Image 1 (cartoon, rainbow, N blue to C red):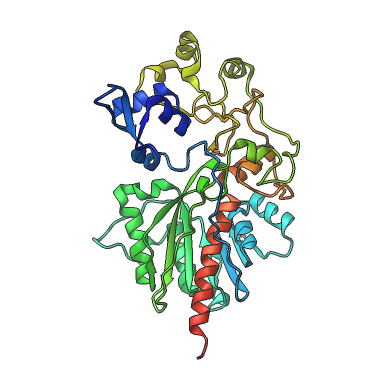
Image 2 (cartoon, one colour):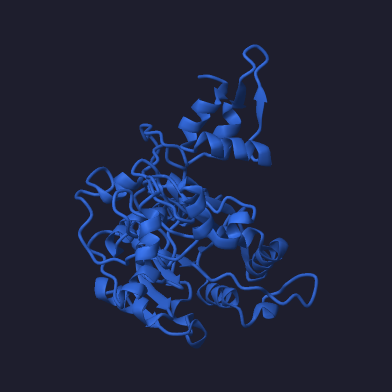
Length: 412
């Protein structure tokens, strides 16, 4: 395998234009240098692969599997459950959902509609007592929102976090006392308040008796999800358990938009027809001019200036604006609204946002998972969800941990 790549080779490998790579070179994101003999600008393959792992358009054979069979019936209690992306993923991994808490009424209706047997606790988490599950649940999961803490002292304690939703997550963990708890959040939590928010969360879990595994950001695209989405995973292990938790191994195969919307390895049929948002005529006229995998910089210069307004003259790539996704690339991260400026995710062939069912496919929801509420509510539920396949892969890692824990706990 070649150690160095030409500009053309790096462009082909990453799916990025030569102009983009040149710009990144100028900005210091990706360093090219002149090859002494030919005087060509070349990139070190190792640097390119490290920087853009998971974003390549390769179709490698996938030999990685995280699948593991549960040795017992394991139970999960989910907080901040949303429309069920993580819960369905856990279910697919073999974990039984005993209860879910969620405040949004439409998301609760979605959960009840699809799983009438699930116990859905609708309402503000602060009003619920979970002591009935004490020592009866194997894992607590939850996508708690990222909120700032008030730092009175040098070390943030459990009591200081009162009034935040992470406090409620920790309170439930303390009440239930599961062997393992898993929180998930956006990547931005790493840098929130210069990292102090995350450190506060770790110190709170430490105070209530849980060691936190080194935090990782998992790229959904490495876990059978055709979307460039990242989720920070926070894993707490009860301190009396001397076992190492291992994150799921990333897959070799990267799935793209075609895998999401057409019959193939991920889905047995083409995406079902469904309703979807539309662009206003003025925006449609502009996006009609954007090629697949293109964005606002691919427009004629005068239209760029008119469409971008003052931000045309500001720095930054703003690569999500007027963006048309290509069939052969993973989708950019879906948002709660499919047609807002800054985050256009235009269909490759038709000038329109993705439909509700296309949104759901990109998040790897099964086609029979129905969403309740208005179209805007449905987009919001899907856009906020943890991708189902990512949830499944994390679920396997939990099952693997619990198998080891209960096998060790058995009387000899």
